Amino acid sequence: MPETLLEVNHLKKYFPITKGLLNRTVGQVKAVDDISIRLQPGETFGLVGESGSGKSTVGRTILRLTEKTAGEVKFKGVDIHTLPPEELRGLRPKMQLIFQDPYSSLNPRVRVGDAIGEALLDHGLCSRSDVRDLVLETLESCGLSSYHIDRFPHEFSGGQRQRIGIARALILNPELIIADEPVSALDVSIQAQIINLFSKLQQSRGLTYLFISHDLSVVEHLCTTIGVMYLGSMVETASRDELFRHPLHPYTKALLSAVPIPIPKLKRERIVLKGDIPSPANPPSGCKFHTRCPFAEEVCRSQVPVFRDAGGGHFVACHLV
Image 1 (tube, rainbow, N blue to C red):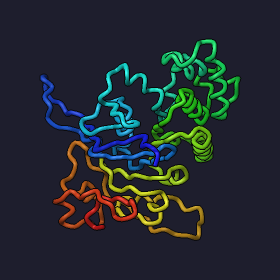
Image 2: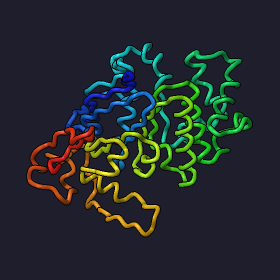
Image 3: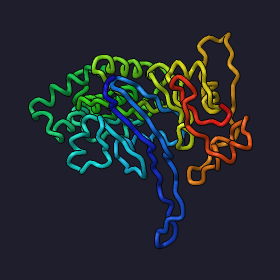
Image 4: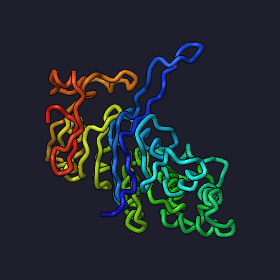
């Protein structure tokens, strides 16, 4: 069995709530509350959930763009949150992030070729004379043309900008890419092109993805394993086929019921959740989902469910299963 590439154990990230002139801490926003993930080389793990469930914070904390509150994040057996700055910097090229909005992550005054190649120079991975050739090669692999290298970000469409974001991550030859909702702002036809590009690059370069999305129909085409988050906690994890064929948690069932069916004659019962997702600053007691769950019982309101194996590597946190 290959070495585990990414191992996240009981990760927590709380943001303090301060008040008054002295900035006293009066509470905590539990953005990520006890998340565990395993990623093998070449695997794609899909992390799904509603907006506000903490998915993006998981990605940023894994990469140590924000510091953790508790838990551990191991990349190839090394806990990156314990590394000194110089060792962490040496590890950065192997772990890259693709942002949801590529335009906001690009400097509008910097040409695309310079934006893609600057990380190579910063990390000393190649000489200045070789940068342009590497940038051109990477642009081509991401479906862009050589003449795009001297253009500015505002001269590109949304799909082209996302390809630029992928190229900027890809040029460092990473082993792990965390994609934070990379297709949510794109048209459906462009989404399909970008998803196909992710698959092509994974096959040709042996990449490992942590793919963050709120759209299960997108995740179904790309991911091998899926984890469902709700209010900072993982509620269900299974292989893609198992999750779509046999969802166990009521929240997962509600998300799946919203996935469009390509065959009009087939009908699926739509599960509409009542109310909004609670505040992570004041999460409900017991099961966090019980305030919106149509099947909630008294035990759901009083006891936190254990995240356990329901059989065959299908994990779920629900008293009703």
